[in-house]
Length: 469
Image (cartoon, rainbow, N blue to C red; front, side):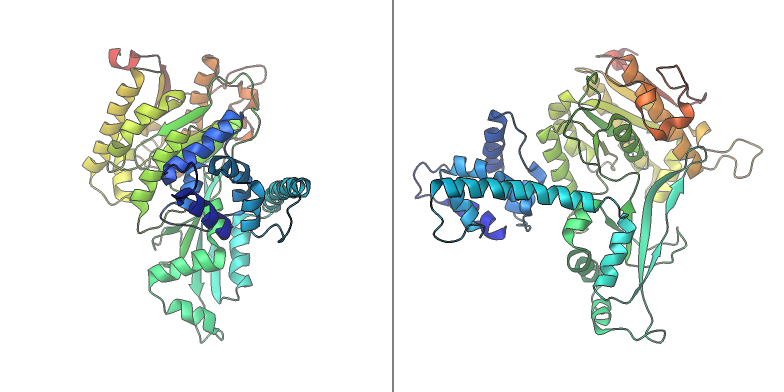
C-alpha cells in the first residue's frame, strides 16, 4: 500500500503531466470526495485517515486505500490497472482490457471482504484479551494487571479498563533480552515501541487506547506502562443503513466542561440511536503533539459532516476558543447538546485535572457563550447535572462528596431526558427502542421514559430562545 500511496503522490505532483493542476493534501481529498459524491457514494476513507496517509506524518496506508483507486484513476487521468500494478497486485504483462477490468473488480471485492472479515474477527475477543495476546505473542516478560472500571448502582456500566504492564523482576524469572532492551529505553520510547511494534498502531487506533500517567487510583500501583482501554465509551462505527427512518437528526455533538461526562452521554446516545460515536480522548493521539492533533481532528470531523454520528468535546479552555468558529460554521446540520454542572462537580474536576477552579469556570463560560451563539440560528439542548444527584445527602456516609457511581446513574438518567426531548420534537425513537442501557426507566405502554425525579434537567431551546430566557 505504501508503493500505491507514493505513486498517487508522484502523479499528483508531476508538473509535466498533461492537465496537471497543483493540489495540496486537502485539495486532493476534496477532489476525491467530490468524485464519489457525484456518484452519490460516500468517500471510502475519512479526511482524518487520508491526512494520516498523505499528510506530513505519511502513516502506513491500510488495504482501504484500494477502495480509492477508481476515484484516483479518474482525477489523475490514468488507468486503474496502472495503480493496481503500482500496488503489486497485477503481474507484469497483464494488459488485456477485459482481464484488467475483471482483475480490478476482484481486487476491490477482495478488499471489502478482508475489511469485513477483520471486523468480524475482532467481535468475539475483548480488547483486554487482544492486548494480552499481543504482549505474550511477542514473548515479553510483563505481568499484566487489568482493572475493569464499572460505575453505577442501578445499571452498572463498564466504562473503561486500565491495563498495567509491570516487568517481571529478574530474580523472579529469567527476564529475556527483548524485555530488558525495552526497559532500558526512556519512558517515551518504551511507550512508542509497545504501541507501534508490539500492539500495532492499527489496533491502538481502532480501539482508541491511550497511555495513562502513573497513579494509585485503581490499586495498580504507579506503573509507567498503563494503557487505558475504553469499553462503554469506545468509538463505535456508523452503520450503513438508517435504523430509525423517523429520525430527523443525523449528527449530535455533545459539548461539556472537563469531567462533565460528555463522553458518557455521547456513548449512551449513540447506543440508543444506533449511531456511530467518537470520544475525543480516545483517538490514539501522540502525547507530544496531542493538542495540535486534537484541534486538527476536530476541525476535520466538523468539515466532513459524517452522517449517523454522535461525538463529544469536553476539553479545557485552550481548545474551545480555537474550535468555536468551526462549530458555528460547520455544526449547522448537527443537534448540539451543551452540558454544565454544579459547584461540587466543578471542584472535583479541578482536583482531577490538577487545575485551579477558575480554569474550570473559564471552560464553562466559553461553553455558555458558544451555546448562545449556536441558539441564534438553530435549536439546542442544555443539560445540567445537579450536585444533589451526585452526592450522598446529609446524614449518610460521605455526605456532600461526589460519588462516581451516583454520577454514572445521574448521567444515564440525564441522557434519557435528552432522548425524551428528541422523541417529543419528532426527531428520535420511542423509549422502547433505546436498548438495554435504559431498562430501568422504560415503562410498558409508554412512548417516553419514566425517569426518577431528580434535580438535574435537560431542556430544548428553540431558535434564539436561550437569550430570551
